[in-house]
Every structure is written in structure tokens, then in C-alpha cells.
Image (cartoon, rainbow, N blue to C red; front, side):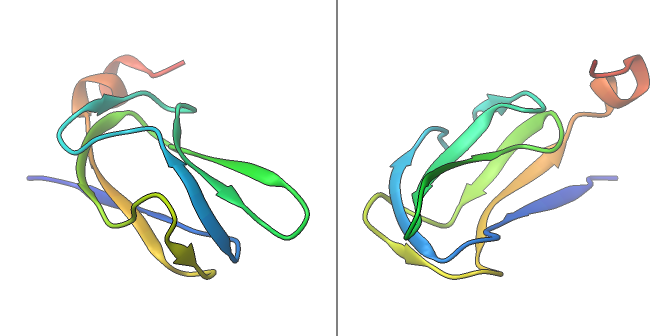
Length: 84
């Protein structure tokens, strides 16, 4: 069974850089993209380890809170072994 998680933007802003690519492996805490808000440049990080299944944003795109930025297919090996 595949378990997918969405990375959702908590901010309104502009994607200044996409730091991951589809089908690449990402570790918990690793940055997925950067969003420039009105007040800051914010790193959006993965909450878990796994493979980037899809990226839904590109550099220069305006995003709003609730926008799905990417989906990750969870890595059950790191869940069972602990991802700390």
C-alpha cells in the first residue's frame, strides 16, 4: 500500500526556488522550495522522508495558503527504522 502526503503552502507569496525534483528522494527536514512572502524568505521543509512523487509549482509562481506544492510517497523503511 502506498501512502502519499501533501506538502501544502502555509503562506501567500512567490516561489523563488524549487529545491527538489520529481522522483528524487527527500529526507525529513530537507527543503522542498523557498517562498518569498511580504516579510521574509521562507523554507518549506518535508515533514517526512520519502520520494517526491509530484511537484506542482515552479519558480516565479504565486502561491496562496492551502496550495499543494508537492506530494511525497512515504518511505516505510525509514518509518520502521526511525528517521531521526
